[in-house]
Amino acid sequence: MNKPTFHSARLRAAALAVCLAQTFLAPVAAVAAGEPAIKLMTLRGAEINASDPEGDGTRYGRDSAPLPRDFVQQPPLIPHTIKGYTVTKNFNKCLDCHAWARAKETGATKISVTHFKDREGQELSSVSPRRYFCNQCHVPQSDAKPLVGNTFKPGTGMR
Amino acid sequence: MDTNNKGLIGRIRSLGWGFAAMLFIAGIVFWGGFNTAMEWTNREAFCISCHEMKDNVYQEYRSTIHASNRSGVRATCPDCHVPKEWGPKIIRKIQASNEVLHKVLGSIDTPEKFNAKRLELAKHEWERMKKTDSRECRNCHNFDSFDYAEQGRRSSKMHQTGLNEGKTCIDCHKGIAHTLPEVEQAIGAPKEGATPEEFHPPTPKPEEAKPEADKAAKG
Image 1 (cartoon, rainbow over the protein chains, first blue to last red):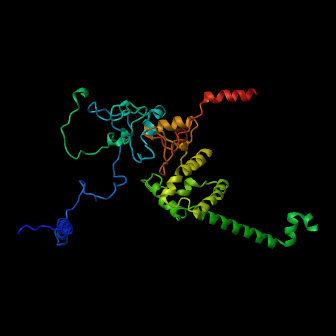
Image 2 (cartoon, each protein chain N blue to C red):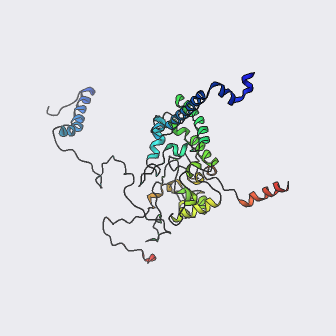
Image 3 (cartoon, chains in turn cyan, yellow):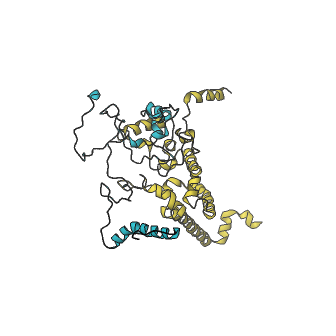
């Protein structure tokens, strides 16, 4: 009898435990033996669990009139600083001026009607919660040197 | 009866001028001591000696412009929360005895308890600022000294229209030093926080205010 056979459920469980132990504990043993652990790194070299630096040295330009777009579908750029602006569960600083109810008084651009739709295309009476995090698409501008070059040209409709 | 008829000056004279001088000096010492003790409680270090302040509102304030800025000029807790004038300061200090009671009761001694009360506490401060035309802001920020050319295009416009309409700092500048409570912004599920009217008090329209004034004048 070359092949081991398991006669009882208890024996089978014991064998399974040994197999599992070998699978999971092997890497731990390897690390303990001095094999270098995989060093997790972020793209910009910061500690992975470090929070974003407060005031990262970015200097936003002075407030300006709305900036031109490079292609029609481009989310409009933010032509002002957003330093200290918070978008939290309690309060969205952007909506405080750009909401339709506030735009007239503040002179801000009203939120596009495309934002009043749920993901099924159903029209809503107020801004869709999926549009809550403005900075996912809309970004402010600073006079930063591009990290990589590119050959992008504005869309033909915008030239 | 005799002493009563002498009057204050007469009574002091009967006790001797030396005694009067001692009274005067004692007055200075007591007054100085009282004021020193009160000013001792008017420091940031005193405010954040309670963990309720240190762990909640102080942490929120640290990254704001009033705590950290390029030239290091700061507005600390009492600069905004305690009036500078003596009378209002004493009144505020007497009201603060209620805060001592709640410190003992532990009403806001965890972040959870603090956040549950955040709306109420914020409303108290908004109301206090509104009542005094944002007096503590104006201790440093003088509208007459605003250089609108130096302000951004948004702030320049909003300051000029707002101040002309009779608005005060706190009408717009809420949550500049601390995290805001929930504010209803008509997105997603309704919030139980500050209503739009509470967050941006409507400006009284001159057209609406006028007829009432006329009526009052006629009546």
